[in-house]
Structure formats: C-alpha cells, structure tokens
Length: 125
Image (cartoon, rainbow, N blue to C red; front, side, top):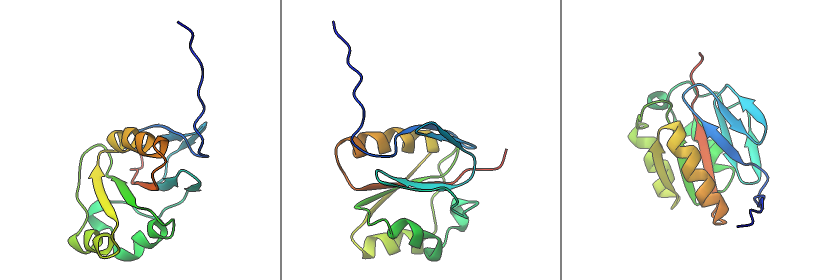
C-alpha cells in the first residue's frame, strides 16, 4: 500500500485543542481564538462561554460563516440564548461542543469545503 501525504487546500489546519491550548498549523495558541479555513484571529477576548455576548460574536460573524462551531473548553457549556438567536436570525447554524470535538469537526467541515468558523474559549492554565 502506498501512502501519500495530502495537504489541505485551506490555510489554517487545526491539529488539536483542549481546554487550555490548541495547535493551528504549527503554532501553539493559549488564548481564546477564532479560526476559519482562510483566517485566524489569535486574540479573541472571551474568557467564558456562559458570559459570551452578541458583541463578542461580531468577530466570528465578520468571517461570513455558514456554520459556527463554538468550543467551550474541557466541558460543554452553552452560550446565552441571545447569542444563539443572533446566529439563527442570520441563517447561520451554531453548535457548541468541547474544544477537542470542535477541532475534529472543524477539520471535517473545512475539508469538505464548507464555510466553517470555529471559535475556541481557552482557559488560562
């Protein structure tokens, strides 16, 4: 069997994430961030999902997603209802999962050519 390395046809490859760090391409990130196949916002000033506001979501929506994956850390935490409503009002799907689940799902959707944006909340140490 011959194995061939297949590089993704998008700019930002999410190799993994947990509650305190993520690896995007070869860069380790330890602060909350946003990633799309063609964009990386390294400093997203969100400290917790349950305190997320619609204003915090604007940086995510500016990347024109069809679906938003929200990584809530080591455990699943849902954002306030008004945050979900802001996505739904624009016809954008939003799913909240643990960071490791978002990392896996992001790679699948980006690999399919979907316009996915993943927003990760990372806790300090």
